[in-house]
Each structure stands twice: as structure tokens, then as C-alpha cells.
Image 1 (cartoon, rainbow, N blue to C red):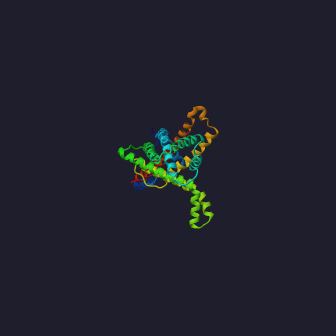
Image 2: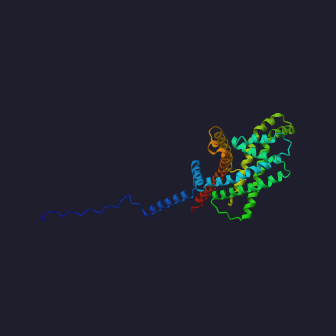
Image 3: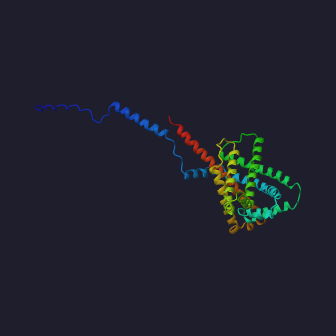
Length: 328
């Protein structure tokens, strides 16, 4: 309109004081990149106990440890009687009265009563043959049957480690025979410690000249020593049986779990059968065989779960090293 003064133009806005300079932006970007690089280079935190336990349970289900345990228990059923025959025939050369009763009393601490009666009856019938070649026959049959059982253990542990068997058949059979001999040797030493533990303690006390205190201590210490023998035997089994390269360990977490868990499960199963089980009612005359086969299945299952623990821990260590080496 006429007569109105023109509106003056607004002055240009000053540059925002919060705008970052190009140099400052580059510095922040470099600092962020350095922080991310340091975070990536940091070793992965090892998983906790419960996470590893869940992985072990999941892996045992995926690797079908229950089915492998049933296969192993089947072959162990054929191996247990020849092995006991060989063991008792060997120990019969020692001047020990009532040796069979003492051995059966020791086995009765972990075996259910019905299964123990079955084992005792078969061994007594075999010993009644009074054959001169009983020891040689027992050794040959025991090694053949035990190698079959160890062959099934090798297959189960390969499945646990998720590897295919690449060794030739003759080598696998030779490993099975050697493992059977090694396990038999450890079992023989453990049995001798059980049977002659007190005599060894008194003999050692007389030789050292420390009196009966050493014998008393030895009577208590021999049980941990026997458990240690079993743990070392199990660690050797886990090292030599599967077709994988592993670090040598005298004692492994899996071997400790397998032995301790097997002892606890055997005692629990024996208590259950003695007080709550009714296998003879359900299966009739086969009830005793079913009880023994169930105990062998429990034993084989704990062997495989112990191997599964070692395999999972090896994978966890490999994953931690891989994560640590992935950084720039």
C-alpha cells in the first residue's frame, strides 16, 4: 500500500555455535572406531557353569547318548562274565580263603542284590568245571568280548566328538583290544586294593616301622586311591578311543564326572531296586537279567556323558580362541 514503509530484511543468522568443526568430527569417529576395535579384541568371557551344563545336556540329546549306551550295555553283558571268570581264576592262585565271597561282597556295594546273585551263580558254575585251561579260556573270551564292548565305546565317543572314523578297521580293533587290556589292568589293581587293602596296610606299616597308625590311615586312604585309579583309566579311555586330536590329561572333568556319577548312580539304583523295584513281578524270571542290563546301561551312559563334557569344553575353548583371534 501507498504510505507504508517497506519492511526491512531480516539480518542473516549467525552460524550455530553448536556446529562441530570438521576436525572434531573426525577425531570422534576415530575414537569410536578405536573403542570398537578394543572391544572386539577383548577375549570372550567363558560361559558359566549352568550354560555349559545346558550345552552338555543338549549335546547328549543330539548325539544320541542313550542309544549308544544301549549298544554298549549289550556288548558289556557278554563281556562281564568272561572277565569275572578270568579275574577270579587269576586271583585263585593267591592263598586267600573265601576269595569269591569277598569279591562278591565288594561288588554287592554297587550292584543290586538280584544282579549280584546272577553274577555269582554263573561264576560258581564256571569255576565248578575245574578245567586246567580255565584261565587261558577266560582270558581269550574276556578279551574278545571286552574288545567288542570297547569298539562300541569308540563309536559312541566318535559320535560325541562329531567325527567320522577315519582309522582302518584293523587299527580300531587293535585299539579296542589294547584299551580292554588297559581297563582290565586298572580294574585288577583296583580289585586287589579292595581285597588286600588291609593286608597291604599292615605290611607297609611293618616295613616302615610306623605302627598301626599307618594301617589305619591306609584303610581310609585306599578308597580315594581306588577312585583315582578309575579316574585315570577313564581319562585314558577318553584320550585314546575317539578319532580326534586332544591334549593329554591324566585327569579330565569328564573322567571325574563319569566315575563319581557312576558310583552315585550305582548306589542309588541299588537302593531303588532293593526297596522299590518290582522287576521280578513285571518280567518274571528275566527280572534279574533286566536289572543287570539296566545297571550296565547306566554305566555306559555315564561314560558317554563324561566324554560329552570333555567335548563341549573343548568346543568352548576353541570358540574363545576363535573370538579372541578375530580382532584386527
